[in-house]
Image 1 (cartoon, rainbow, N blue to C red):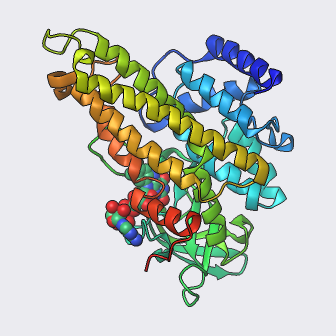
Image 2 (image 1 turned 30 degrees about the vertical axis):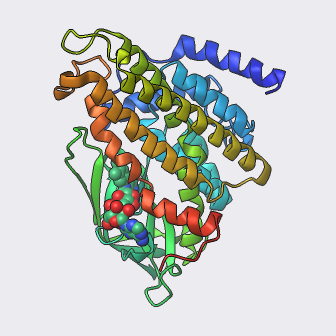
Length: 388
Ligand SMILES: Cc1cc2nc3c(=O)[nH]c(=O)nc-3n(C[C@H](O)[C@H](O)[C@H](O)COP(=O)(O)OP(=O)(O)OC[C@H]3O[C@@H](n4cnc5c(N)ncnc54)[C@H](O)[C@@H]3O)c2cc1C
């Protein structure tokens, strides 16, 4: 790191110390959106949103390394999870930058950074998750519109979003990976024929949704990339999600490990010695701390590659798998440190390891399961034969 990078870190630290919200982040619904967007607007006003985004779209055009420094200090300062801003800032925004028209970029990018637009991702369908290209939601070109009919599932925050990244099949006769189109679908106000239904889950918060489309008309000007060339658009955006987009989560994981070490130093769950005095617990905590350091090193390597080549590559899947599985190991370890106390949720205002444990199961599913990412690494990084 240069002197300027170090000075940037100090500046970020000072701003965060003065501005990170102290009240708890709501877990779902309109209250969560309002909390997240107010905080996003504050970061924008302070000059801390879109650090590596181009200046003409409201960013600061600094390096990905500076972006990483910001995420590190952000998590250290206990900044809230990006929450409802995730798809807009980490996925739709970068995708529009790569593939959008100038009009689309000017319309959406500054609003995403200023906290005025929430985005959701409409990729998965009941019959198409890992095998995303099997999707069948139809998009029929009709004059200046594309008429959409079908169903998407597991769309996070669709109930409170303004726009959705929507994949539709515009050419059913083309080979599977061709004939797909990437559309900007408005969600608020809801276009006629579009319905959003929240889905209940075991971990509590309601943010996953089912979205159905019954002849929904979307203007052709909302196509991102070319008609029938959506697979190319989606592939790069999935890499973004698997790669650099997850830095803040990785840094929070590092913080979780440090918090867990502190917890393990306190007296045991039923008045016994502190759990850290158990050799096996101590060994697992030490391993987790070392693995977090390894994850950080992998992310730095990946970021310097992005800075050199401009776009992230399939290597992002390595960090993603390691991060997801490490997150699960850490939360399982937390259950062992808590012992019998893991049988109840934490009181309001305290870190809830039980909820985190339940949530951790999603870490190797959302954005592509570990099995699929192993195939990506095998085929595109190691050059092994393709999965039949
Ligand atoms: C918290 C969360 C949030 C999500 N948010 C969104 C969202 O906002 N938008 C969205 O579109 N989707 C979202 N998803 C959906 C997610 O992308 C899918 O769940 C995921 O892609 C897996 O698809 P599936 O659930 O249909 O499982 P399936 O594809 O049916 O997989 C079932 C099992 O089979 C395995 N498997 C499947 N194919 C292969 C293969 N070829 N080789 C080896 N193993 C295989 C999988 O690894 C998995 O273990 C979210 C999911 C979660 C958990």
